[in-house]
Length: 273
Image 1 (cartoon, helix red, strand yellow):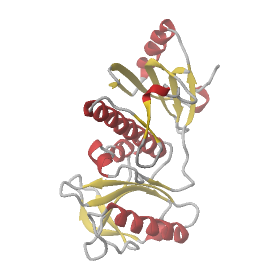
Image 2: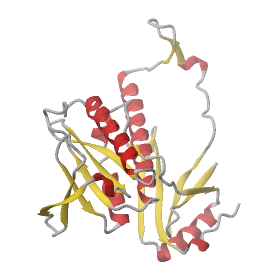
Image 3: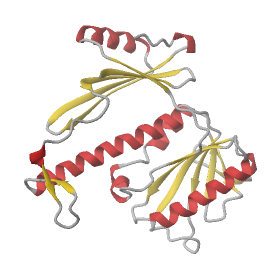
Image 4: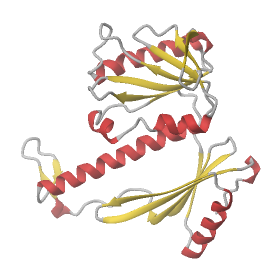
């Protein structure tokens, strides 16, 4: 069990989380037998709900958990690695049905596999979907070590006067690529595409693509008492570069997580039991 989690991204950036409630690890407690019914259609066990409101609440909790898990992984992968390009990949209607998520992701996966073969083992990427208001899908990504993808200047600029490039080896639609100048900013930017609305439409389907050579942060967890927690809060807020207190409910019980982000020298990070 723990109420503090520390993530060291290996690049001088450390995130600390302080939880309002104790987090328990390991197997979840099994439901009581009286809460289990047998499905008359397949004979399998299913949970009994007293009303549709209870079912809706559980589905909403499941959606929120899935959303937090996906955003957390995308954030960790993008934050723990250094990137060269922020890219956008779209699909032309004559190439693929842009409104069919499975068709889009099948094409995307095949292209990424081909590019990994072409670019070599150093090619790094993380790619996430975005859903238009009209229901069409396109994808955003962070790329590194990908000179072989044929990235060329388009002759256009963003509103901030940043050069816009195109990916020559992408033939399924329109592309843009801009150079990454701020790794922290682009990490938060790509994470924001994973929304509740998106999760509702891609439930049970793949939510992000990452190359196998990506790094993940080192994690350590601790349990501290209230006095130690207050001291830790005071210490972290002295020089943190980012702070947020996020609130959420589990069932009808309010919870919170305080996030602190600090810049440190690698040798300053210590994990003491």
